[in-house]
Amino acid sequence: EENLTPNFNIYIIQPKFSHENRICIEGNIASGKTTCLEYFSKTSNIEVLTEPVSKWRNVRGHNPLALMYQDPARWGITLQTYVQLTMLDRHLSTISAPVRMMERSIFSAKYIFVENLFKSGKMPEVDYAVLTEWFDWIITNISIPVDLIVYLQTSPQTCHERLKQRCREEEKVIPLEYLESIHQLYEDWLINRTSSPLPAPVLVIPADHDLQKMLSQYEENRDKILAAGY
Ligand code: DCP
Image 1 (spheres, rainbow, N blue to C red):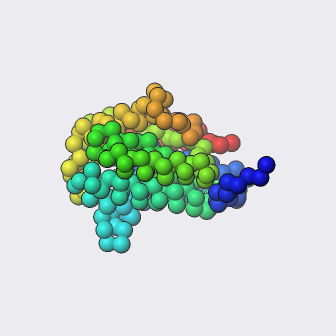
Image 2: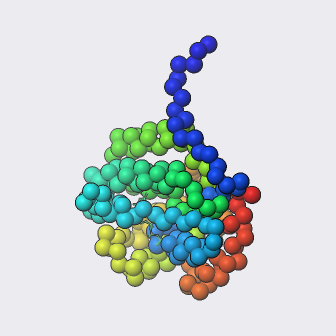
Image 3: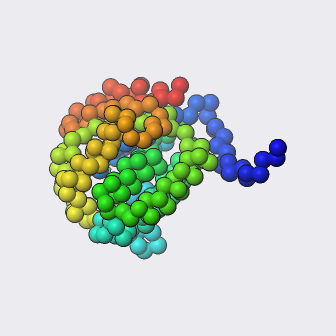
């Protein structure tokens, strides 16, 4: 029988290197993902993609990140639609080294941030439904390979302290409770494994420590991280 369904596999990812390791660094807001990425960016043969947060703060002169924090019920879908696009673009961009490390993923954007907005009653059900349809379409029709998730596991209190020190204008309104619910969603996804599917194996790195200790932990885990996918 003729198959009338169009073939939506529009992205054919050709491996460029004999092994390609795609590593996603995950963790709460201000858990130290950027520091981790910066540390490994000094290693040769690694391509590091930081989170496109500058785009979320400026799309054609608009700041959907700030709008989302000001009025999540109105602007949550606006930010999260754009986050989903920028994440997809990152995942699909041509890989330029045998190892690629990126900050967060299209998976945590949906399973953590969209889920949090909806569950906390800050996103209308219709917005959640539309975002979910988009996400489901993307992951069924487009291949998004991930070989390892590195979970920087923090306490919400530590993130709150770091957030206050960092002083990013948009984030001044984030209360501890917000970080607690993001934390719980991460734990249910990556540790308890009771919520959403895992796209890759998970390596957990305790991340409440000071910078020096964090850097030595990254060094200790270097081989485990970089050998992912082999
Ligand atoms: N954000 C969001 N929805 C997403 C992804 C991120 O609302 N799907 C928000 C949370 C933060 C901002 O975007 O306010 C930047 O997020 P990150 O925590 O990923 O970036 P950080 O710079 O905080 O990471 P780190 O401090 O760990 O380096």
